[in-house]
Amino acid sequence: MRNRSLGALFLILALVIMVLYFWLLFLAPQDSEFLGRTAEEWAIVIPVVIIVYAVLIVIAWIGWALASTAPPLPVKIEANES
Image (cartoon, rainbow, N blue to C red):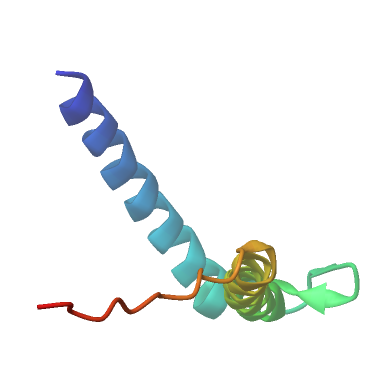
């Protein structure tokens, strides 16, 4: 039952965020500003920043994994003595 309620919560949150995003992007008043930007500008800037940071975090994680992983040991080839 916990998985179903968590899934329903995710569904409801996603729908609410979709409606809010649509409102911010298309229906928000143009004369209201927050930190020098309109709601429409914030609706574009915030997802772009999140996407760019997500990509950069993945690249940094790959770089860290490459830098911190020991090189593989050399493979010794044994000759058959038959």
